[in-house]
Length: 439
Image (cartoon, rainbow, N blue to C red; front, side, top):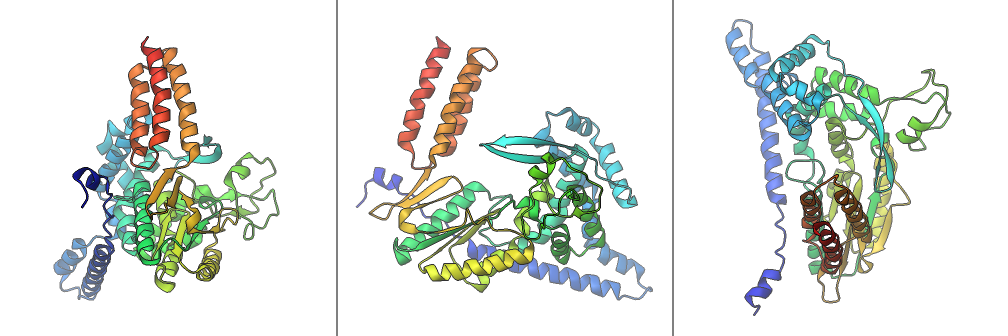
């Protein structure tokens, strides 16, 4: 019999809502079938009943009509204001949002809309340099409305439950919880003997082909104007690679290397792939485009313990030969999609040795308890950041309250993992700097 204090330490098993997800997909499928039947019946009505025909068609607006709905455009402005309201360019839109949305709606209906150039820059994230194409705020409003009003309602019912990136109610915490639930269930059924397959794509966003992406989305949206708009939004990401003879069907395209390479570009060879990083449409494309791989693993190969976070995939199984055959099938699917698997980051490792996924190290103790520990670089990087924040607070660029809040906000995200000793050690460093600032 466990004591009350011991019972509080027991982590409850995450509730698997796969049945609820299936029921939701069935409900959406029935609704789409009903809408399609009613629209077909309305289209077949004779011209003697124009009012009835118009009433049926107006009750179920087309995807383009949902996009140009002023309510959806205003909701997109509010979403932009929530994330980037401190920028002057965004404030110029939000101060006169009704006029802006009306003008944007008119340009979409008239066909005069054209995306602006935006600007490009390079960021260094944890030692990894990334090429970013930032959108103009007006284009960001359109893409928010396109994703929320058109793409997400049409594509979400076809996504698997364990696809956890860039969706409402999901994210990094969701993916980590699902992996922990899969590991606990696997241990109860098979023990700690088994294998884990980890797959990563090479230059994932840079190698998504525009034509195949648009074709896969159009198969679910079924609107010619939305298809043309998607082609217009993806066109700026095309690259002029006339300076090289590299076969990008066999070698991954790297937008950062292309940006930094000098050479003659005469437009004779244009590579229509890459969706950039940061744009709402790019995020939805990253979530949606590898769906055939999800379907192959979950449905065709019946991989129960499978999950994907954008371009990172894990599969648990007790048979190593089965994982090898699944990996061969995933390679065929990726080749058909125009994606490249990073052989350097793709491994099959024994489950007993533990593995790292999304910056968390998963392993089992001798008693079968699951341990979830952040990788060591997480605390090394935070220790360096604390020193830098201490220097900024000492010279008056930030306040002591800012120093305190920044550390506690970081700490609250990791306190749920098995890293008590590392946090205690980092707390000592934090308190030492804090005492120096207060005295």
